[in-house]
Figure 1 (tube, rainbow, N blue to C red):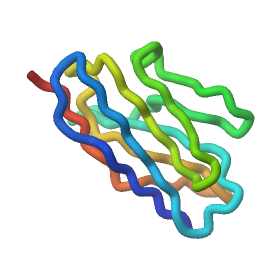
Figure 2 (figure 1 turned 180 degrees about the vertical axis):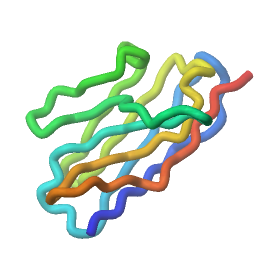
Figure 3 (figure 1 turned 120 degrees about the horizontal axis):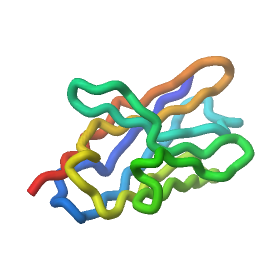
Figure 4 (figure 1 turned 90 degrees about the vertical axis):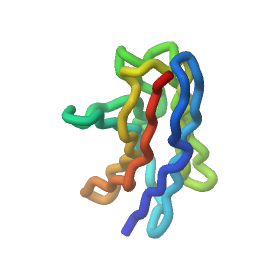
Length: 115
């Protein structure tokens, strides 16, 4: 089993920044594909950024140039640095991995961008 725990969400003003963290625990040796998703109220869950097994971060068009995803492979952790936040970024952000044939999700962390 794999557990994913997100942290770092909160309330921020437009133009502000937040850094989200996701740490994996449990039987995690070999995890090499992680991603951030988000879901706004009434919306569908959408991919924000991911680091595939071969490396090379990929981003949704809506966050390119503002968000940066990174990994700490020594402890199977992933981060999302979010800059220049706007109200459209308001959502619950989820950490995801696909490992040994199944999806794993964290519980989510809320990000609210509001003045």
